[in-house]
Length: 395
Ligand code: NDP
Ligand code: GDR
Image 1: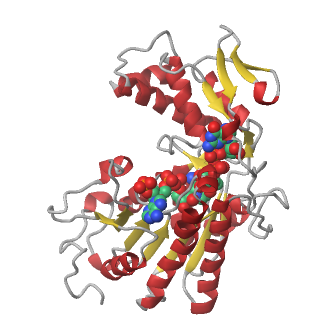
Image 2 (image 1 turned 135 degrees about the vertical axis):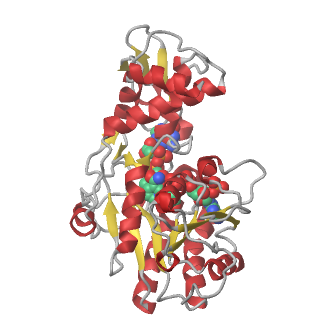
Image 3 (image 1 turned 135 degrees about the horizontal axis):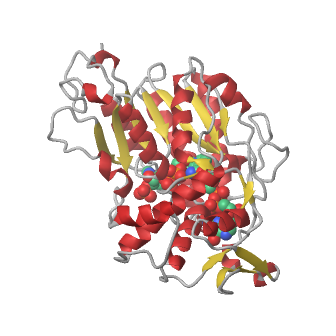
């Protein structure tokens, strides 16, 4: 048994029963998450810990603090029964990855690490290819070099961006790919190298083709979080207006909490395969803006066209949204709409959080975040219940 010897990363005692794990170490699974400090990494680590896993996360060295999303999961490594460990690492460093996989001996690897911003990938295409494309190969090779092909299951964070210039709507597993950015081109390589290692070496390697998923801990430069933060900041008078790019792109937006559950289910299947995870509903950026401002009681009306277009507060006439062409991408993905039928049939997975619930959750959270950042103790004027609750929670 791999548990016969003491292992440097496994505690000597059983995991706490309070977390639903029965205490038999032989059934405790070990997971390694790359990108553990990101949005999905944080939700996934929390999910796996709740299922009794020993979770190892890879974090990058940074001169500034980058573990804010997983702070609540941190355990003092000197305590007994530690089930969450962080290790320094980088997807551009193959020796580091080989050593980590060797030390951790994971049952499951979730490869979530990536330069994940589509617009930024046009600025840093070579780095994006290295981290997102070759980085995936490095993790797969680590498994193979260490002879763990039959032990370690592999999940690749593939993306709806693969569909890019859409060939079929809605998009499903069989829809042809047409990447429209250096990010998507790098992820295309990662997708196919995952399929290839499955077919060539019999590895349990799967792609989750995930459509956009958001949350209150979404990176602040992705459009949804940028909007919800701005709604809060404008509401508190600490931001004048919100600058956006293309208001008409259509996205299939879900909640990250639902999607990490899908990732886990993909790795629990007897046979590795590729799955679309999506809501099957799409909305424009414009609709997201309208719904987010509606959460604080503002109605946005649109005036002008093209880069002159503005979103106006119907009640006060204040300009809430302006267009900044720097946010347009050299090549845009106009429309993404996923068909999650296969995931529903084979994994029993479907999204739970609806689009309005997602927007509400994010706006409520950002009202709290922005209030806390600026030391705002009371809401500026009478507000909806959730808003008051968020503010109270933050102070
Ligand atoms: P985030 O950008 O929030 O997180 C990315 C993570 O990868 C962070 O932990 C980041 O570290 C880490 N990272 C970046 N570069 C490297 C590197 N060279 N070596 C090691 N770690 C690195 O992304 P999400 O959580 O939203 O997404 C997770 C994965 O899923 C990504 O691969 C993304 O491309 C993919 N995806 C996301 C979708 C979404 O809608 N969210 C949809 C489909 C796919 P740090 O915190 O230090 O920056
Ligand atoms: P996306 O997400 O490119 O779909 O990639 P993002 O939120 O960045 O853009 C969505 C759409 O909004 C338009 N947009 C803007 N986008 C940003 N970031 N900032 C703006 O000011 C702005 N104005 C308009 C964009 O042009 C785009 O059409 C995300 C990432 O999480 C990827 O890692 C993941 O693979 C895909 O989702 C699925």
